[in-house]
Length: 179
Image 1: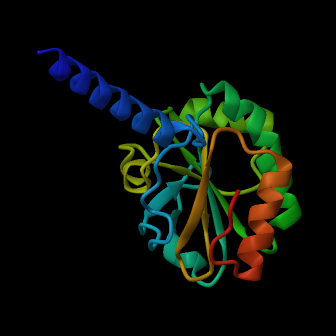
Image 2: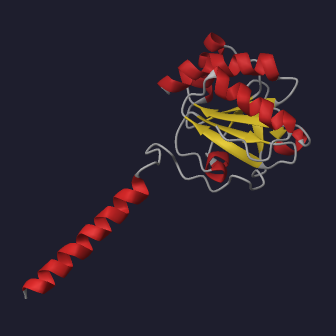
């Protein structure tokens, strides 16, 4: 009976070592992203300011940066000036789009009147676009190349250096930008 306990304990220890080994070296905040390298889901949404229809198809052949955000999101408030800067700095190289996530149009408009709106903001009233893109929370920023392929996403507030790096990679046609 003693040898069974010893073998059981050894197997349990080996399993624990295996689990720990697999976990080390990974970012615990990293969210699995299954759309990397896949065609970006098509969408047609209304622009918050004008009500005009905006679709991904309109930007074919041009890199697209899509940011999901909400007025109630503290990190989104801190991130918004970076996106405004990015749209002004790199707007000739990539199309920036904002998508209002689980928020009211009125709250989003008030937020944008305070913070600025130099790029189109889209409404996603039933979160259908957010579901298609696999949004887990806000802010999240997606990077789509000229061929309509999602090259990556950034979870959390993006900083100017990371945003600039993505734009450089998308403009250069970099197939597997790592950020």
